Image 1 (cartoon, rainbow, N blue to C red):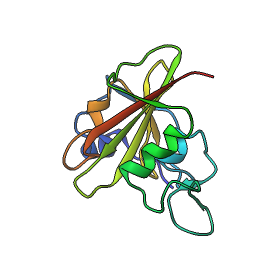
Image 2: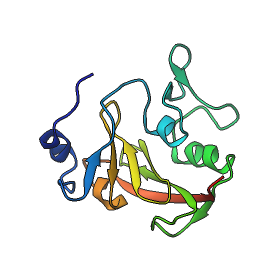
Image 3: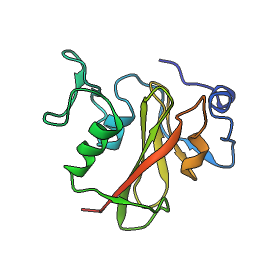
Length: 148
């Protein structure tokens, strides 16, 4: 896997610029955004069977908004209307594009973070920076829980 250049990242996500995001890891196809949001950097979370893929039991067999939210609800998250980062809270934002593909961003209470598919992990100042028709679509749901 090769790291994407800032120009490649900003071409895919035109709202990003050097002042509103920073890379926090090297590119890897070992894990995706759902795994990253569940603190698992060993496996790719997707409802495919075998090999390096993982999908939690009892949530459904498709990577949809409903199944994705169920994963977080089962782990103590509750819906919220606030996209603000809040010390003492972990948050997840579920994006959905026009193909019904899902992206998950997380907040540890300090900033928003995303795993860009097989590309790098990034920190970004706000959720809207990844929104758009050719990006991750729109934020459809935000959930939060108190930090353990």
